[in-house]
Image (cartoon, rainbow, N blue to C red; front, top):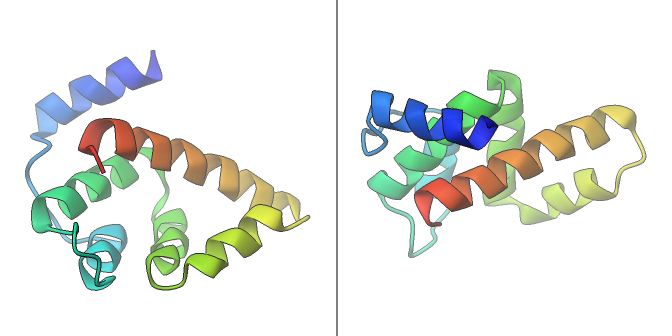
Length: 100
């Protein structure tokens, strides 16, 4: 159901529009060959719908330093575990809708 609502939101918002945000900026500045405005904008739109602004800022650091993601994933802190669950949901949704 959540996925269906997200699909409707993409249609309503126009998934190809790009707007700057922490994820979009990190994606474009990460130096990866597949990164482009359309893909990074799509990923940012998924982030806007699935992550808080604080979570987006935290996740944007993973583009520059992927080891940070590993540290959070392996952390024993409850707050890190909660964030990781939200981040995994965001990542799988972004992959499904943005083809990244």
